[in-house]
Every structure is written in C-alpha cells, then in structure tokens.
Length: 538
Image 1 (cartoon, rainbow, N blue to C red):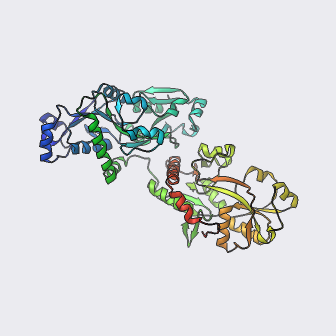
Image 2 (image 1 turned 30 degrees about the vertical axis):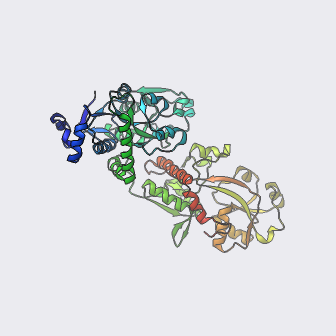
C-alpha cells in the first residue's frame, strides 16, 4: 500500500490536490508561477520514498523528514510540481525500473543499477576513489543491531568471523550493502522491511541485523523496542546515499531535471541551509547521554599530553580537541600518575585513555579494534593509531662513551640496573631477558633516578624522553643510545567498564575523525608544532 502527496507551485494547484497538502508548501513568486504554469508538463514529477526516519516518513498523514524538506525546497525553486509516494523499497525499485516513478532518495550507487538509474560521474567514482560526491544526499553508516540481552556474548571482528561463529544475520530484500559484506556468504535471512528485521531480532530469530545507525534508532524508538535492541559499536561501512533518477521515466528532460536538482542541492549544502534542515530533524533519539563530559585520563607525557599552569597541552590534547568538537561531545582530560589512571580505567571511572598500547590482558577493560590487536602478531600498523613510539635506552652522558649496547643478554651479563615504569607494558623480548629492574612511578622519576645513578639504563619513548629531559632541565646530563629497542603504536582505547552510552561507537567515530585529520594534513601540522627539531621544547 502506498500514500501519495502532491505538491506544486501555488498557481497550478488544483483544488483536490491543494486540500491534500494544505499547509505543506510555501508559495512561489507569482510571475515565476505564471511562466511555469504555461510550460508545465501534463503531470507532476513523481518521487518514491521509503519509511526511513528521520530522512523520509509520515507524520499525521503528511510526509516529513530531512529528504522531504530538501526535496520540497528544491522542487519549488525549480518550479516543478511533484508528488511523493511511500512504498517498501522492493516496490519502489520495480517502479523506478519501469519508469512509473521518476526519482527516489536514499539509494546508493552500484554498477549493476546503471541500467535502471542515471548517475553523475562523481557518484560513480566513489567506489574507486572513496571521495564523497558533492551531489550526494546524505551519508549512511551501517552498524549491526543486536538483542541487548545477547550483546555481551556477541562480537564482530570481520565478516569471516561471523561465518566461522555461525551467526544468523538478517538482511533487507533488494538492499545492496557493500561487496565485502556478501563475500563470505554467511547465513542470512531476508526481510521485506527494516521493522520486520527488528521484530525478528527482538524474538531471537536472528542474531544481528545491519541497518543505518540513525534510522535504526528512530525506528526502534517508534516501535517501542529501544530497551530490547542495541547495536555494536564497530561500523560496517559508510557510503553516500543519493537522489536517483529513472532512465525509463517519460518525464521531459529527466537528465536536465537531475542536473538542476543536484545544482540546487550543492547550493543548499554550501550555504549551510542543508545542515540547518539536517540538525532540526536528526536530533532524535540516541539513548540518553549522561550529564557529564566524556572523561579522558592520561599521565604527563610531553610532547603528547602534559600541563602548563594546570592547563592541558600537547599533540594528543590538540588532536582530541579538534575531534571532540567535530563530534559535538563535551569532554575533559585529567592527568594522574599512570597507576592511578589505569585504576580509573579498570573501575570505569574513566571513559577513555590517551596514549596506551595494546595488551591482551587489557581487553576486559578496554575496547580495542581487531587491527590494533593484530599488530603484535602481524607488525602491520593499525589505521586507527594515535602515534608511533620508538623506544630506546637513555643513559647518563658521562658513561655513554664507555658503553655500547648490543643485546639484552649483554646487559644482564654486565649486571646493569634497568629502570621501568609501574604498570607499563614492554615488548616480550625485553621482559623475557630477566634483567635487574627498578620500578618508578613515572617518566620524570625514572630519568631522575638515572641522573642520580640509581639505575644505569632507562627505556623510554625517544620523543617523550627528550621532551621530559628538557622540561626537567636535564637535557645536558642524559643521552640516548642509537640502537632501538622496539616500536609500537600508541592508541586511544575507550573503556568497557564505563557507563557512558554508546562508548564503543564514539571510539570508532573518534578514529574516523583521526584518520580524516591524517589524510588532510591537519594532524601533521599539530605534530610539527610540538616536534620540530630533536631539541624542540614541549
């Protein structure tokens, strides 16, 4: 069953149509309306929309939502009368293929669809370049929705893992998702509409159901299932959804209408008009956020995170500020000795930890991505790392000329005392060497112990050690040995133990913005501002 809503410039409404959409549209200028009335086609332009809140849906018998308002404004400005009809996606697709419908929103580009739909060159290029086309309508981000009761026992690392673990995955009929999703051929069950999939999820008939996160949250709230169904934080994919136009349509100059529609859409986006529409409609129903900032904890580790007169400074501080502003989330960064910061993460008092590496034993307290966990095994740098640490031995300068470091075995044979930091993780070879360790609470204490000759060698990240020495006024007293010990990525994992809503999802959003900053060069600019020369001050 469908519902049709007709829309047109005010001078060419017929009485029946005007009653159906009373109060729905603003009038256009009379002169333009007369001109358009003389040249108007015999029928309105037809859009098919799916029930996809907050983008397109019905409320009190009228079409509403982001795409409805954007479409209405554009078609009014083009002076083209139109109507909106609501169908399940499978029905809309059939009508588009037959030319019974002229256009539909919220459909992605797929090469096999080119026989049915008109696409711009930029839209077609997305799959190969990854560049978001300027004429896209909105960006979808799919996640797996799951039954909240089963969520602690479910995991998603890869599509191959879903197949291996035998998970039952629901899919929407005629949806394309993306190529890697289908590659593993895991067990799927098809549904006509998203609500059908959510109901099956609530009943335990399937284990996972992929859906755009925003739309899924809207639908669950409307269905009264938001307390029964949640979602996993790891996104499946992001892609642009488009307003697509039918090749089979008999509407005059359908390609020209498409180009004019896209031109108006770009203008709306450039002027900020689109964002205002989006923000007004999309501010719905995430689960209630806590009335507190998201809390990052860390230790003083210049030049990445440190304080000046009690104010946070550093590379990671500036990077986090830009990311959290982009995400629109209040936050705070708190500094503690490392042991206390880690205790806060264990107890769920912290929400995220700045500058911590992967360690398998930490997985019960922290969310790690599969790529982060795989680094120790594969050596492949994860795309979501914060910064790369190169560990070296620091030594008091007056002893440097008389000592050459070749191996851990040599250090043990020479009986040298080595400093370590409490609760730090080092690499397996370093720990297995069975050296004589003296433990310190933080980096400054370890370097001070080196100067005081309590220890002979102190392993530390080269960048951090240099900056800390300069801040302590000890740069002339200590040198580092050229032979590297090990390298590893430092991360920003978020805490499983925290009660902050949607925290794993927020972590992935943080990583997405971090990757964007790297790609655009803004991360490097921040890094260079703090680390310009080997002797750069923090």
